[in-house]
Length: 220
Picture 1: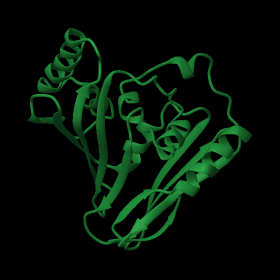
Picture 2: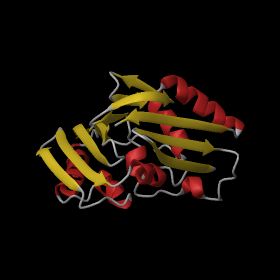
Picture 3: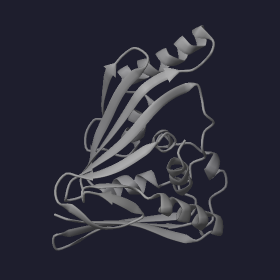
Picture 4: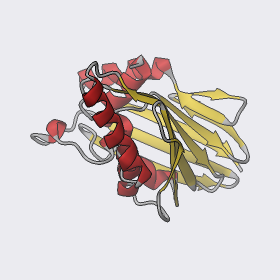
């Protein structure tokens, strides 16, 4: 897993799962509309089992692709749990190992999506989307000084399926341009990815029980 993934999981407060036998390259793309609506697209590519036993490998791969074909695999269940506008859509683009599965869902507001995503953080997370003329600002504040409820770290929710394999996360603006950011690296004014420097600061804030923010501002 990348250091960016590990840092994101720390902020999300989800215990990292031990690496299993099912391997995959996963990308998460949030297509952000100027008004804050968002489409979350997850591409699971090169999905295969590295289990040495042939029978167990086949069983693991078939369990995954059967669930994906029915739209009941982990990613689909996670997006369903985040209260989408309509049904979650899953497309199996390659139905034999290595598999290729694309799942997407539309949401009314990135504010609601991030609130749900960080619902299990250790401490408290505040997410706010505010409009100022033609500008929109998404601000996320993580306060790690708030005590975590007992056993919370051991609990798994459907949303954990997204956080635990989030190798790459990108927010791409469908119209307009990003004009300011904290905790993100901006590319060409339309693509935002989590900053490696911010991940290091987040890890420190978590250890020190401090507070840290992320922010994105764009013009419509």
